[in-house]
Amino acid sequence: MTGTVDFTVLLVASGAVVLGAVAGAVGVFAVLRRESLLGDVLAHATLPGICIGYLIAQDKSLLALLAGGLATALVAGLLHRLITRVTPLKEDTSLGITLSLFYGLGIVLLTRIQGLSYGTQAGLKTFLFGSAVTMLPEDVAAIGTLGIIAAILLSLIYKELKLLLFDAQFASTLGYPTRFLDFTLTMLLGLVIVTGLRLAGIVLMVAAVIIPAVAARQWSDRLNRVILLAATIGAVSGVTGSVVSAAVPWMKTGPSIVIVASLVFLASFAFSPRRGVVALWLRKRRMQRAIEEDHLLRDLYLVAESKRAIAVDASFVELLGRRGMSPGQLRRVIRRLTARGLIVESPFGVRLTEAGMERARRIVARHRLWETYLSRELGLPEDHLHRDAEEMEHAMDEQLTELLKHELGHPERDPHGKIIPGEPQ
Image (cartoon, rainbow, N blue to C red; front, top):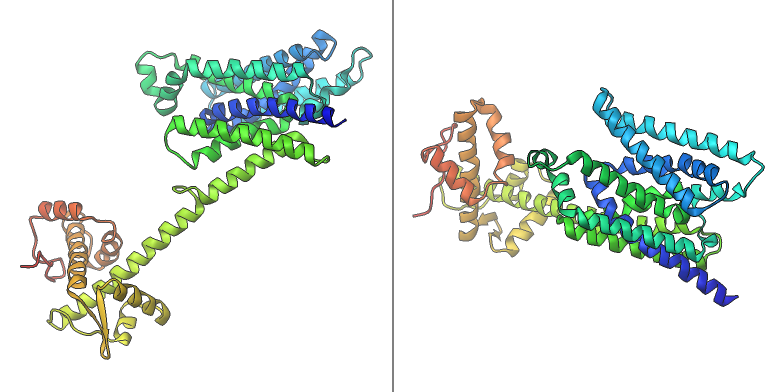
């Protein structure tokens, strides 16, 4: 019994690895072309083809069922593209119409088949949700064969698909058959979906195509790396889902694979170094802290400027009134700047160090240069300058500051008549 179970698990895991890898790789192109919903349409459009294949073969011949499913999936893809080209309907409307039409037709045919007296039609419903436990070695062989075909097709037209993905109009001007490439990509997507019907089913197969691609996109901007990552995530999700399904009797294989892939996506969405929620929050927090520090340095500079001194002590109460910070927030900013040697505290308040004065001078110069630019070039009134300049001063680097200074003719004063700080003598 154990040997039988182990063999079944190995059989399912083998098919899931191949399916997951190919589905993840092809799914990248669907995701980057914003055609994720097309996969959903193609998956549901396989149902009438499966039913037609059964009616022709009068038996559950896997080859006939998959061939029928692929045929109707391609017809649905072509119909969708035809609708968007010859009618004013938008793409989402076309996808909705196509999905409803083909899936409705499939349900009608499936209901009709249930009433027939010939053949063994009882297992057709397994294509809706998949049934890995009933897979045979020939099913895995079919998955492997179709997966290899899809991988070969993808590798043969990879460069053309890459160009189509990033600039379809440029590809057309170079003479590439963009419509044929569109059809080939649709065929690849349909082939992958048909390959996984026996394992994951119509309902979940589109998730196996899209989720690994979306998860991989969080980690890289390079197409070849995204494809490799998506294939890896798909393969790992496939084998892990198969093992989980074998260990937990009430867990189906298809849902297990999708759940594992979804967990990988959630982890990628949260923790990827560039697009992850945590990384974005940390960058936003660092930017907010930098802005708070710049504001305090500029306030200290303005206090010294108003008192016609190089650096003077500004009291805690005076600083609170200038920026509107809470006492706790102001104390935290003071501690950070003190630790970096930009300000010093005394019994009378806070003052800039030499290094702090240099940084504050640059911040004030950027602010007043941008105010000058907004006033001269855009004609903004004086009461609108400060807010816009305060937002821009944190984004300007030294190169942009020098370019702006040159474009404005090295002005000495801003629109309010205040001196624009220059380089220290």
